[in-house]
Image 1 (cartoon, rainbow, N blue to C red):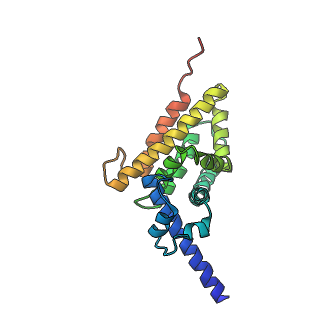
Image 2 (image 1 turned 180 degrees about the horizontal axis):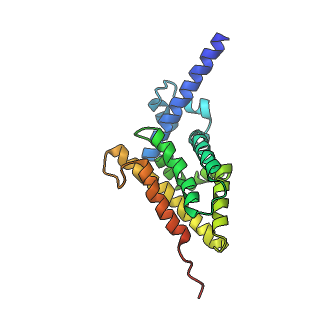
Image 3 (image 1 turned 90 degrees about the vertical axis):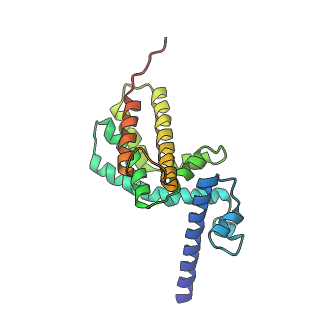
Length: 216
């Protein structure tokens, strides 16, 4: 049993090193600009086939990184929803979109790479479906969007869909930009992830509550 336990622990450590190395390299260079061999080397693996052995294809590796972060973000959002109840305030639901992500990034310390990783993946036509699938599988995110819809019943369906896309783009790329600035040591508009989230929530409330121009 001890031998099996030791091997399982070694496998777990190796997988975590590969995930961390891949996340950093994908965030900084783009997914398809980085080879499995480069990931293996950055993870300190002498075997260049280590990525394939532990994860399979690069697509499987991207999905594993997304799920590694998706689980703690889901737990934070579930906690927020439990406190929120049936609020009719759009700002509360915007916070449920933003703060689980920023709180998770803040908890990782600095530097982080996940926000830039997501920005790379969602702009890649071959990989963006992965993030879309992971998003659709999130019960807490579905509940959050349902909360928005209850607050804004007068919004036409196409406007609601459009503003959901706007919100996703703002969250993804503003978090990635702040993460990049922190990693490079350049100034940021807000001094903390908490304050950055507040500014982003302010913007999202404006997006969701903006007037709708009627068709001519």
